[in-house]
Image (tube, rainbow, N blue to C red; front, top):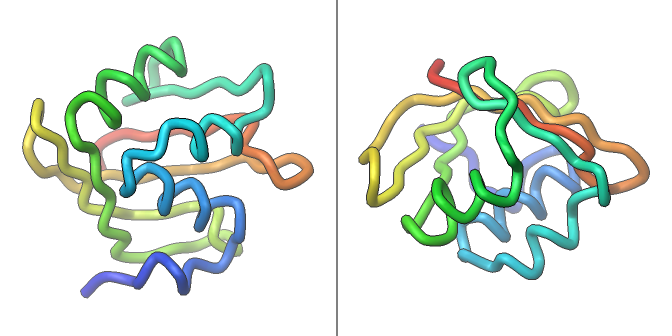
Length: 107
């Protein structure tokens, strides 16, 4: 069972998932702090290179299964044209309505 994106608890995370699923790079990057960072499977990555490779150029899409921590932690089925589908976990740090860091990896 998935949670409809418009029902996610945290408004910034909701907007992030909406923009990612729509492939809307302008909207998604507008949700990031200027110094935002991220990690994938425990390794820090270049945020914009990662988003380009894993989301925008490969049709990334997130179907959220569950949320915790007031909507800042998600478990989602994530799929893209490069890797196919996998169960992933996401943890967001939100500052002033913008994402300053997210961590993702296989769940």
